[in-house]
Length: 238
Image 1 (spheres, helix red, strand yellow):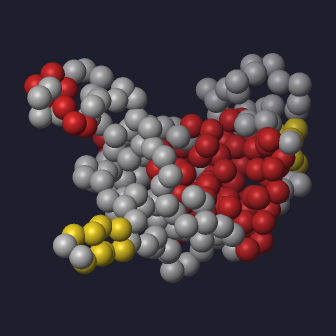
Image 2 (tube, rainbow, N blue to C red):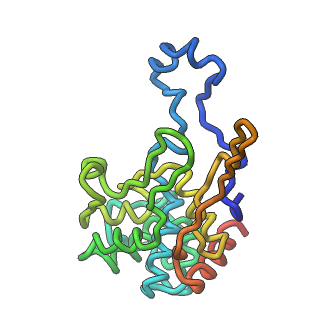
Image 3 (cartoon, helix red, strand yellow):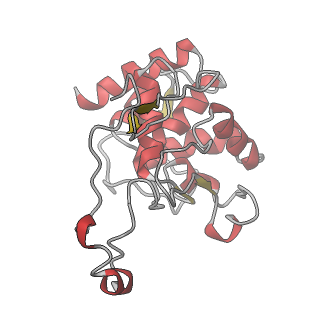
């Protein structure tokens, strides 16, 4: 529920029978497909193109671009970057269309031009939104938002110039799906970052403990940027 943070449904596959975990423990823990891993909260995956919205939020918030800014989306700043269509019908796109057409070239050109000589500033600007901040989803073993190549995860969020273009469209990072859900919910909520939660209340011997979503003390971006992104995301599906 975007407005409240209440998780209405969660799926992780492959699954298992919670009533028979003890009986089948050895089998479940030995399986290579890790059925006990809750992929929504514990899994770490490159968010791919869903990350482009975050990259463009940063660019809009910093005044690097506006939704109608024209971006060269054909000539590559980074030769190894490709789009899903190797021969696109466009040579230039507005920033809004970079998102609508999910252009890797356009996104990496925007972020590269602004941050190529200071890639860690891009990481800092992502972190300023608060979307990477850990939160308690009431599940054991839940993990967090990782920025940069895996070799740096136990050190700090670190990237260099060669990591920057692929980070801009959702690689060189790994994120549990629930974190990306929280980010998109924040856009729907006008910038309010609301933590998802699973347990509404616990009753025991006549005593009830109720849980409520926690909302970050500051929005992920300005009202102007959020309104721009809402319009841009509508254009993706219209």
